[in-house]
Amino acid sequence: MSTLKTINLIHPSGSTNNLVFGSSGQIGVNGGTYGTSGQALISGGSGAAPSWSTIGFTQVTPVATTSGTVFDITGIPSTAKVIIVNFNTVSTNGSSPVQLQVGYAGPTIVTSGYVSATVAAINGSGSSGNNYSTGFYVGYAGLGAGNDRSGSFLLTAMSSTLWTCHGIIISQSFGATMQTAGVISMGGTLDRLRLTTVNGTDAFDAGSWSIVYS
Image 1 (cartoon, rainbow, N blue to C red):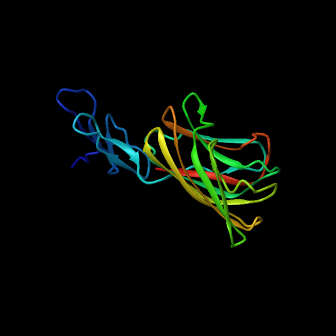
Image 2: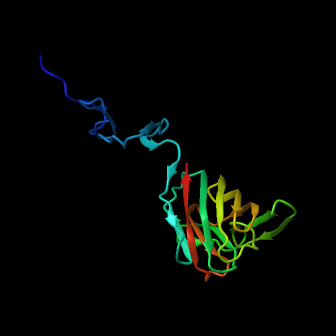
């Protein structure tokens, strides 16, 4: 008895294999596209073929913030609706506030128009806060040279060009917990993030940052 190795199914009106069953049980679509491990087959609706897609969050490799003044994470897909930004003991050698900015193709980094505020509970008592328009502040503006920043920001899309932000940052060296929230509307679809300082010249000297998105 012969062994059937592969089954190819082709629509009568076409010439490309619409569906392929491989000898190891793998399934291919659109001419034998098998996707990668962990992906799922997603419908393209009534007028398009299905495709393989990653389900859940995609992790971006952490980037060290031990030197330099600007860090960009690019390549965020237009399909992303949720981005979690993580900070691990990030610090600088100066007193200019650290901020997160969004951007879109061009490349264009949005440097104004943020409706944002940060409030800090210092040493477990009292609070202080301010409004900011140049970015989402990663920690309270009063943090100085060598003060660490750890925590996460949650960015969520209201549309491809309108994003909200909410996050909690702690600084053990400063003795504070800081909360940031805000919204930004931009002129294009978000595809990048930038970590920098307000003055753009203070150098980062410790820590790392990364994102996951879905």
